[in-house]
Length: 458
Image (cartoon, rainbow, N blue to C red; front, side, top):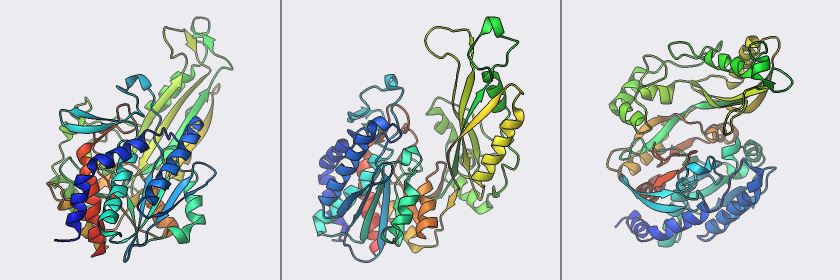
């Protein structure tokens, strides 16, 4: 019998206890972006320190100007891996769209199987705990881990990670490892695990356009006075042309042509874009003309409006011309696109579009470049084969439409390559009401990480 077999058996026998521990963490409302939940974030960090220490890790909470970090080390032999996750979660608004209390996690039976329901189920507490539980199982069975494992958990990922890079720089010697493991990604499909080898970058901008000094009566001033909502709407409409391309000057500088062999690999995955869209009530691709869904999601940049405010939005009706109108706009970036150059060009485009009676204020919501991981390291193929042993289909190297800046920070700040493995699914509703994590994803995710740790030890 190999060393991994009793570990997998232990995981299977103790799934209920592992799920209970996840529920304990999920009950803590660690919303990092809202100062009202600062104590909850501290509580989540303390919970993780105690949990890691329970199976022998040397764990501590580290204070930052924002929410604390959790750092822990074990004494395994051989390759040193650093596992990263985040314990903070997104806000739960709108609360009335949740079927149950978002911080009272439950197991629900759905038509596709049992799911864990609650905020943080998939992003990122459920994912984080798959790795922690794999380590716990190894320690319970063998008294040690197959490789030297460190843990690095932050509490500000959902609010821009303002303390992350300074902390990494101040603690670089302690945080360096042979390989970083990151869990904040997903499966290719419910039967196919994935290792993400490229991530889009992210640029966040907020604009507020001001016209009159006060809100105006639309009967007394309508037609004669500038309306900031109309100005904002015109600017937003101008960000794309009729073929779905972004019109900001210089936006596509640094966007690479997709290699034919990579395009073929992605085509061979037989991604069903109809099913992908149908699952969220849509039917038509809405991006750049002539691009496949996977190209749009993994290899092409985007410009999206994430929120608009202005005027009266409460119940009933108020005939008002607002003094201000705002929009939050995000850009997903690929290749070597420079987020700072794009920010400058975007702001200039907005300034150029303003009428004389309007002004604009900009707010910076972070900027990170795209990240490309090299699979030349044999660890990547070892991990791919280990994942393939656990799931029905062989694991695939894929792109990721999301942005995980920590992967780039590991490389630039610590000179450490990152491997991104996660078990989320497209319908997990992360950042949305009724977030869920398939119980199978949690169970098999723990087993998968146990196998990956064993493979990295060889």
